[in-house]
Amino acid sequence: MVQVLIIDDDPAIQLLLKRTLKSEGYDLTVASDGEAGLIQAQELSPALVICDWIMPRMNGLEVCRRIKATPELSTTFFILLTSMGSVDDRVKGLDAGADDFLCKPIEMNELKARVRSGLRLHQLSRDLKQQKQLLEDELAEAAEYVCSILPSPLCDPPVTIDSRFIPSRQLGGDGFDYYWLDKDHLVIYLLDVAGHGLRAALPSLSVMNLLKNQVMAKINYYQPSDVLKGLNETFQMTQRNDKYFTIWYGVYNRIKRTLVYASAGHPPAVLISAKAPFFTQVKRLKTPGLPVGMFPDVEFTDDFCEVEKSSTLYIFSDGIYEINQPDGNIWGLDAFVQLLTSCRDKSESNLDRVLRSVQVVNPKDYFDDDLSLLQINFP
Image 1 (tube, rainbow, N blue to C red):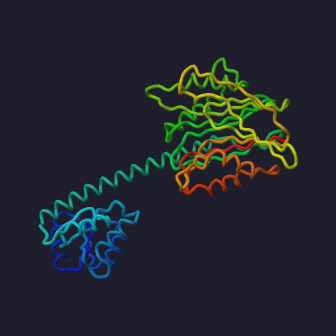
Image 2: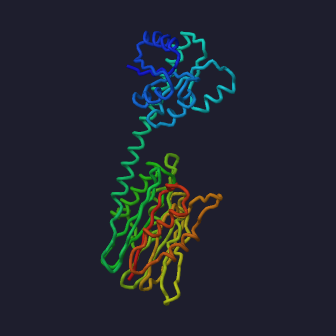
């Protein structure tokens, strides 16, 4: 039975409303002042509230504000009962959150019609809320699955790797992995699919699975540019698929201490080396190349560098530095690279320290985009 709450200090109005609505089959509860009505609303979670404007112990506007500010009562339909019919008064009521108005003296057929209309809107709001919750639950499960397939930290010498992944409020398209192609060659990559939601996450999972299992034919997985070429041929945008992605892909040779890499529209990796006790060298590792899937026949190129002892490589997605500031500017890549340099610690992983510093410059309690960060330590 549908629960309707009547809040009015006039016994005659209470009786009139009860008789009229009881004949319609509603479950009715009555309160004689605003404070008592608010308590009843919080206890019963009624589908609809009919509340007088002028009452002792909290007027109707304040009751409305408090009910609408309660998440559990967000779908409750609120009808404000008033003898004040001016436009200014209605504006005040709407600003307080009222969904509809009934003017005194009450016309019974109008009352019944407005209650029926309000209950239809209440049911629609409940249905939408339930569907929204189901969607959020499914996205949360998908985000949890994405986190579960990301690699664990690599703790075995000669290379150690630590990582952090912080999803945004929406499921995104970040993905990364690292594994040994053989005993001497280590693959490290990070990709970021454009957009959010399942349409971004699914291509990311597909790419990770494709690279892990090395199923692209005639691809040299030791040559980053060849890998990016194969991905570009496999994941071309079409009329039904408008997703492209950026990626940084590198192969480290532990015997020669060289790193071969290629990138496709991705932020540069940052290699930090201690050249002398008081001198730190910072290299940004990036090659020309459009994002994967944007255009066919794109040329990707390799570059390489030697990796000094006691060096650290950072690979990340742009969500970690494209942070909107209160002044309207973007925090930016240069500021983030400076942060990495200042936070670097040879003796331990410092990703938590880096992320704490990033959160300080983020004015929100969440990130607008997925945030991924890899730290590779070369002893």
